[in-house]
Length: 123
Image (cartoon, rainbow, N blue to C red; front, side):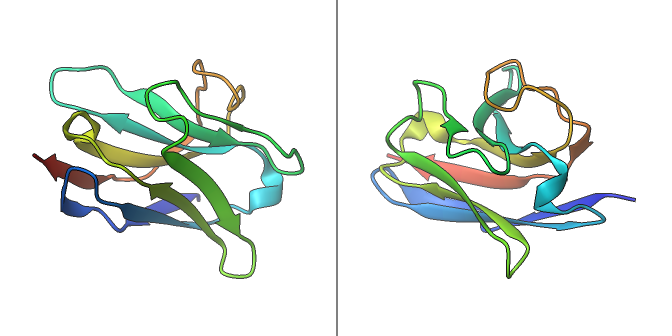
């Protein structure tokens, strides 16, 4: 059974930074796609970062490109999302995701989801 546990959310002022962490169990990075999504109230869930093992490439939508960075620490079995220069519009529930296909595109459809961690950015 795959479980994804996020941490690192919180409240920050605009311009600040946060780093989200995702600890998977029953899943290893070599198995395939992993990524991060977010969902703001009243909006659809959207992919904000995706990575495929063994490829030196990642996906970011234009709304976060240059500000967010996805990375993984194999030794710690942890996926990260470093978020810099945060904006009020980045406020959302953030979800870790794994499996599925298409993680290097906005149409990524994961198999597994975490429970989410809230990020709130104030002006």
